[in-house]
Length: 599
Image 1 (cartoon, helix red, strand yellow):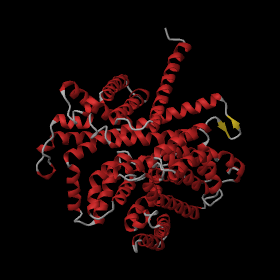
Image 2 (cartoon, rainbow, N blue to C red; image 1 turned 180 degrees about the vertical axis):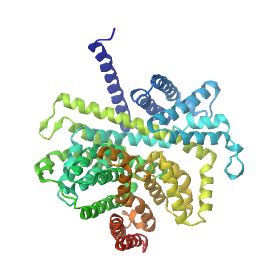
Image 3 (tube, rainbow, N blue to C red; image 1 turned 30 degrees about the vertical axis):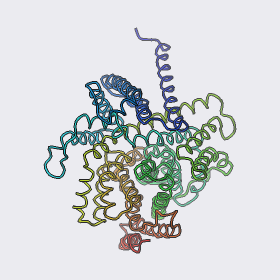
Image 4 (spheres, rainbow, N blue to C red; image 1 turned 180 degrees about the horizontal axis):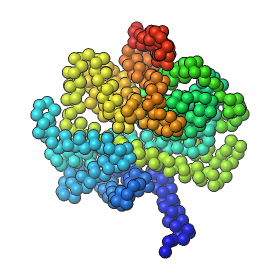
């Protein structure tokens, strides 16, 4: 006998309630950490993983019955092991990174397998496969001949450092995920749950809608604003693209161009402060510097990227006769002003605390979170009602908890690789290899590093690709004279290449599907519009003043103008590449302007 509709609804309702409760628990835990002061890392970080496990293994489970049942078992085992580590923090600290007894060894191996499987389910096979290779190297690398072998690591030391000390999955990267990235994810979810998204879309449309190629320029502005809080290229495409792609198509834009505009503009969200797809906070940790130093260095290059996209849209609009948006689709001033506070107030609070006080970025985000939450009960015309407020708040919590789990699965798995690199000294050996292959030439080493970033980024998420590449290539670049901050920005930008570069180009596939366009044509247009992603990192090396805004502001602005002019020329040359020799000359002149007479 089949269950009645009421019988079926009850479990679903109970499950939804449990999901919402878990979401609020995750959000509350990470926000509370802002104000609780210092807690032991081996307490906080295992709890972070325990809260993330159900979102990947149970709530996000799909596929076969075996996959779902194994998900429950793995989540349960993972939570039990995390609880054991958190409960025995002091005792484990006295073991100095060595596992003791068969129970700890079994638990350590199991938690590593759970982290690998978590990453596989969350972000596919490439990242956990790299982690498995790293583990194999840690275990058996002593048998490799030549300089790439290592002296050997005791099994209990290797395992213990990775799972009961702070040299692997509980390392500094996980600390960034717990203490900073999660907080900004919560902020982005709260702003997006209310009318914040409508607010910045209205601002973008009001500012750019009437311009030549207006709908495409709205996409650029909206993606820059949304990407600055989401830090996710795919989320950016899905949200802003749902409005901009149909609008561009309705105005006669070719489908491959409409999709390319959105794909490129959305990719830029990962290099736009304040969030930078978690990259800003990872850089803070790896460089042992301050957050405002990273933001000040990253802001002008990020603007140049979006400026290059803007130039490309202008050239496409002039070539193809692309129109501005219809006046009826542009919000009036009153509508803009009524929706403006929904993102200006949270961002104003964030920036005021961040740059007006001595508090940390996570504290500033905490203040902004409360400001964003206070806006949820409101509509532009007044109170939204209790039901709407609850739906927005619970929806934001679920969205934030899911994203926190996704980032955790990436960073924890990357922590295995970084841990093995540090224990075996492999990073130093790869550095020596890069120096050898490049012949001691900085530009050759830069090109080798860029190629490595592109290959690694094809299957590994941007933040993980950046962490791995900077761990092995960063020391070589610095040994050849590149300042540490420049090296980190260079690697981070090139870790993004695969978002628009075939064969993977994730944002291209998403946008092409939304526009019903052939992905290869979309990728071709995206690479032309996104020329800044290829040139700006090299331009930073050739013009180091560009990232010295706080030290030499006039030189930084001069470098900004010079690179902007060079990008405009190269963009025009690419868009009009089939029309004769002038575009080739313009492209060459643009490159010369970027790289000759550096500031």
